[in-house]
Length: 443
Image (cartoon, rainbow, N blue to C red):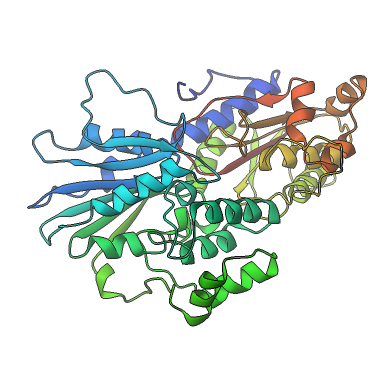
């Protein structure tokens, strides 16, 4: 599917189009082709091997192919999510293989891709360059279980982590220590070649050791921390793996590891840059802009309620924000999946949709407030929508259809709620990923 293109000259008279315009601007700012050239190293004396994983992997590979000198050797393998490989521009020769696998729960295709990527590090020399293309989603896509752990074990642990409410740092601490390729292990395998990592950040604070579980950077977290997280969320691992964690046998390469010496990491796109691009577009339309943060974490519904309280007080003239304004934020919230009631279908939806449910509940139909929350990769969780819209009449229209917002919150069914009132935001894969984008418009 084509990438979002910013709409032309939206106005305050069409809040829905205006919010979608801001989202599209944020996504455009994070597209790899716009951000890669300045960070590309010079071709080496030897080979250049491209390895990578993430939702933006296909687009990052195409950007490198378009910018790399035609007479310089280039080969490699990148894995991205199913249906996230962008159409190939006419005339652009393919020199980097792109394969697809499952996200957020890994599958056999991802396992095979990780095995092949590790194999491509064999025989590298000090004259060679490994160009690693890393973006959000790489943890699930680049799956290679440690000794004693099966793919089925990894799938179960991933599902339990996703449903536990654990934040991204906690999830990736576990993933690193249960992997044979993450947490700096891929870079260690590349020695003695030089490694340059180009990465698109999808994590609060742009911690490169967290993005895709940091396959090419040293890891300061420990086996003991991974064990503590597993205990805290009640997640079991096979006895043999637990023993390896307890003994430290699964420890990751640490800062100062000689195998990672001289490696470089370049952040080519970040959540803050996308928020700033959206803020600039909003100001051009005559709006006052408040950028809360690009590092907001917490339960999605609760974060939505906080945004709702800010917007409501602004609409009522009780805050320091001056209308008309737009409140922007990013980060990575979490959803704790509630136990399913027997006989009741499990709800559908992701972080952005659940944020919108919490926001709508807090607003209570407040006049003059519209909002959009969406994931910048175009997929909210595992559904086909990027997110959802909230309008002043969201609750009224839902009531006309017999929907109760509290019922949908209770079963984590944001998708069903917003689909019923026609307010899902559907973009298709955007071929980048700087995580959550939220815009609350107060007129």
